[in-house]
Length: 221
Length: 221
DNA sequence: CCGGATCCCCAGGGATACTG
DNA sequence: CAGTATCCCTGGGGATCCGG
Image (cartoon, rainbow over all chains, first blue to last red; front, side, top):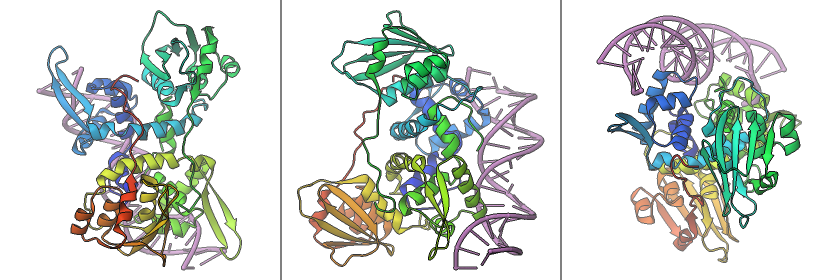
């Protein structure tokens, strides 16, 4: 990317991560951990392979990723984030939290992935009742499946299935995710096609996070 | 910008703010408040005027900015952020904080602006001694001047001059900013050309912020 | 002087095909 | 599977011009 040539930490950062696809590649590496080229390609529908290749080289040149040859049974290169790359997690959290407000918009043919289903409640909600008993929620959004585990004040998620769910949420991604991140209440989510079976009270413990931070007056730091 | 077409709040956000120059325009509007076209152009050295015009239209279409005709004595359009646009401040903070690590790199002919000098200590440091007496620091970095006011646990900054400074820091931007945001200690900053006159103890109260947040295990949310 | 619009040119990105 | 090569086209950089 062409440098902005400004002595400002925001501009300096954007010189490294401002290119198209770059932050989404970081997102995939953050959510998936060390990944093969093809895994990244699958997680980034629409990316041209030459562009992915170029970006991985640029990221490595910037010191945000590295790649290593993994021996059998993987037997291929694995790309992963360095410490500086991992340090982008708060940036992705901030961007993602801001972007939640646009998840209500319907774009019918958007791609969707279980990893994206999983990170949202983990990053953007807290357990409102830290002293409550453990709870497990099975999600199935447009066939993408993930599990939420509530307990001890934390919200942990993972991709896949569980056999000991207290609550199961099934439906279109917009209904499931909208409900989880606080963009829709249960009634609205059901109107959007959600089916909830089990201990619906568990939903009350999922509280969308708010920013602790108070906006500065405009023009005054 | 071409949409990523992914049902993911990060991708949705980047559909709106991922274009080149867009976040820097938001930065200027955030730091300057309502601005004229020419003010934005001056704060964004290198931007082509047609591109600035295009971006302002796109930002307005996205609902992040609006513009209003200001009566005399301004007598021109003023561009400003909407509530959704202002909500990008945490995003810019996160990006800027991450980018601080690259402020040590020297790019000799980078542009520099007093607004960028001012936001850094305000966003990225705290007052380590909230009960201490008020303190005022005058900054002069490459001729760009700003004032830091310490007191009551907050770090406030403004562009310009004061006549009641307890401490004055003068020198190249890299030395002044590096010292303020914790990339350099006083000895190193002086080696880089810094001159400090006055109550140097005040510097000990400026503490670079750390992220409260603990990085998740890779691949586990 | 302010607020753009127009034009030209080139780099960066998208799509597809192909190869080790 | 893991990329590279190629072609095409859009979008951005830079300069200039124009109306208010």
